[in-house]
Image (tube, rainbow, N blue to C red; front, side, top):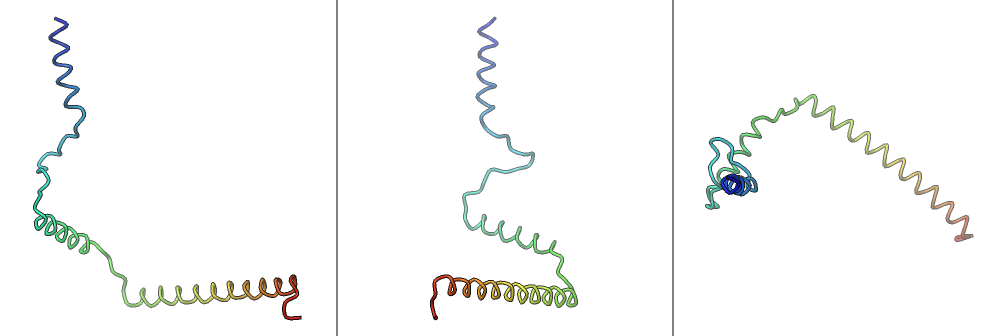
Length: 95
């Protein structure tokens, strides 16, 4: 009786190591042309889901980005001048 249960347990554990396929899922195709076609089809499907901004939103976002970049450039430029002046004073270059 112990032999019967151990053989069925061995069969069950052998199946546990592999992931099960989803219902309706086919095995992976080895044909690269089919795989490329499927990839491109899925890309088009995803692009259809994209919500593009209106012209007004695009202009607003662009202005916000440009203003932010300008502010950051001024901030970093100011720090560069400050630290450059401090280094010149500390090491006496240019005196």
